[in-house]
Image 1 (cartoon, rainbow, N blue to C red):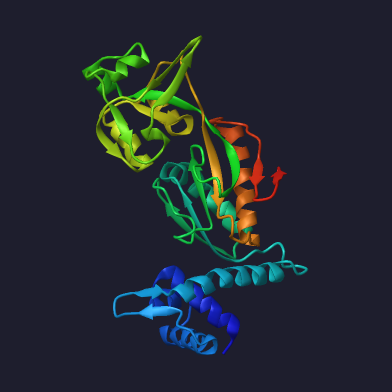
Image 2: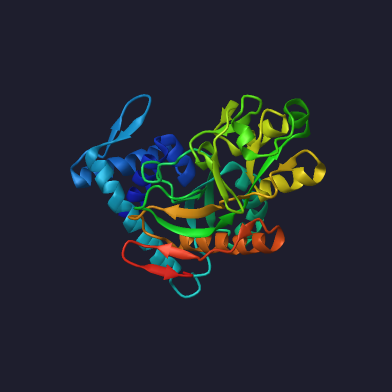
Length: 321
């Protein structure tokens, strides 16, 4: 038994929840993966996985062993990529989760350049606006807008998203154009709601010496950024949007800017990853690439304000790392 192959097979079964899926991603037969895991269990003299006809669950011993295996596999990956001539080609599977509008409008169009630079990295991209449990879902990193609520995570602040208030002409024809943000609390007006994020909380708005928080009422609330925008374009309510999401629709006349003499607190954008997860070479280059992408966004469409770039580690901060 090759212990490295066995540990890799076991880790992939835990991550995919299936011997068949693990075999597919490893380009091995299901029989080979099964035999490797069985040999590993025999060597360790513990059951790592509970198998049924429908699913595979990791045992308590298996979960503890999996966390150790992740570090060992990451250390081996770093050892290989640190060799002369190999450091420029990080390789392996990287699991990332990003908000759906950011993926559609910015990240995915830029990925051909990333894969041209790092052809050996296999990117598993989760596209969602839901709250992701990074540790339980075995995600390497997430990109999210809003303040981090889990202070145990390590994070890199990418920038600050400028926000504006917008509505479709069809909505304004039906409900009228509000002249003051407080009018959004009236029964006459509706917003589009957003579940489980900052967009579901009151917005702080400022003008001269006046500061208010606006919540609004909705007839539709969604948990997906693309659906949120589509609902606003359909005239279902008023939107709070980052500039990059509104720009093209504002230029085409599909959206109208409201309260332009008011300012909204910007939304910080973070890349976060688990505090106990080894930062492998492939994760480091992805983090650096996202930082480069942010810089091009700043230059190209100007929807972010420059922000200090900080790695927040358990013991110390690395400025500009």
